[in-house]
Structures are given as C-alpha cells and as structure tokens.
Image (cartoon, rainbow, N blue to C red; front, side, top):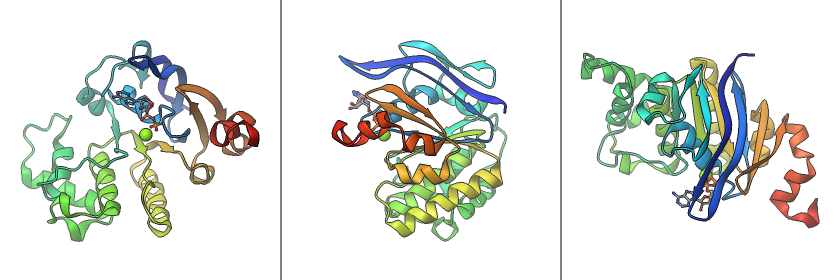
Length: 245
Ligand SMILES: Nc1ncnc2c1ncn2[C@@H]1O[C@H](COP(=O)(O)OP(=O)(O)O)[C@@H](O)[C@H]1O
Ligand SMILES: [Mg+2]
C-alpha cells in the first residue's frame, strides 16, 4: 500500500497543556483510518495541525512526498487535503449551492472558471450528499443533519485525495447516523478518497475503519486493526477508567 500522509513526532501545546504530544502515524492510500479517543484527547487538534489551521511546535508532516509542515492551508488543500468540521461552519447567509461553489473555486487555479460552471459542479456534489432540493436554502436554515451533509459536499468539492471527517455522527439520531455512514462509504467509492475518520464512539469505527489510531491526553496509546483496539486494555482504560480495564 502506498503511503499518503506521514506525521512525524508532532506536538502542540496551548499554554501549559500538551494537546498533542510527540505523535507519529501514517495513512495509506485507500484506507479508512479511524482516529479515536475520549473527549479532549487531541483529535481535532491533530487534524488542525495536518490541515494547517495550527502549526506544529516540533516534528514534521509529509503528504504525497511534499513537506507540508508549515504550509498555509489553501496550499495543502490544493495538494489534495480537505476536512469537515465537528461543529459545522457554514456561511450562514449563503445558499447551500453558493457555499459549495466557494469550495469548488477554493485552493485551485480556477481564476478563469465561470460561476455558471462552478455552480454546475457544485450541484453535483450537493446532489451526491442528498441536498439537491436544499440548494437554494440559506445555510443558516438547514438542520444539523443537512449541515453535516453540506460540510461533506464542501469538502468533496475541493477534489481531495485525503479527507478528514471530524465526528460526523455527533448530535445525529440513529437513523441519521446510519445514513451518514452510508454516505461516507459511497463517497469513498465514488470519489476514490482516502478517509481519516474521527469518532469518539468506538462502535462506529469498529465497522467502518480498516485501522485505528487511539489518542489519550495528546499521546498515541494504541494503533492497529479495530478488533485488536477494542480488546486493548489501555484503550478500555482510557475510555472507562482503570477499574474497567
Ligand atoms: N485553540 C485552543 N486553545 C486552547 N486549548 C485548546 C485549543 N484547541 C484545543 N484545546 C485543548 O486541547 C485539548 C484537545 O482538544 P481537542 O483537540 O479539541 O480534543 P478532541 O477533538 O479529541 O475532543 C483539550 O484540552 C482542549 O481544551
Ligand atoms: Mg474534536
């Protein structure tokens, strides 16, 4: 399997808090890597370091042979990295369609692309995510499930090779969560994207992930196939406390 992303000994502190502490791992092309850990473990911070929202204090990050450690976010996007946000971040006053148009045009050399063409492309991504009928609705008027679909449509519209999906199930009811899992699996197949899937609910990743990395207090405490992770005493302890290990 070809290695796509390599994270080498990255750390990030906020004041006295080590949010990410000397973490290394890699993602291979085509896999669905699960990133797990209790609330506050550092999952989102790790994504912020890889996508460029934050810069690592030390260590390095390579993506498809490029050193992206200190690269600005839009250039990382252009190389093929995209993400969704745990807390959806829509443009409230734009329609669903226009907010996907922004993604179609973002981070690419598309200065000459007409808005009509971008709109046509954006429609395709909205439709894929089940939001065609919402295309003219203002983002602020979408419900949570629709906003999560929109996050995915926006991420896919940048034509990524690697996509980070941050707690897409949070706040969804079981039926919506099942639909969201199906949508991600279809996205993987249809667009050939590699996925890093962040979840703090273990059961979701047991089914979806090919491999799992577990963070606890900013440190990587385990890495391996889902079943091995589920049986790992350190992982169980991190979730339930030592009395359950
Ligand atoms: N911008 C920030 N400033 C200060 N502390 C932060 C910031 N972002 C995250 N943290 C802290 O870093 C730790 C890890 O947070 P986060 O990466 O969001 O965890 P997770 O996504 O695993 O729940 C938490 O203690 C959180 O409060
Ligand atoms: Mg998080």
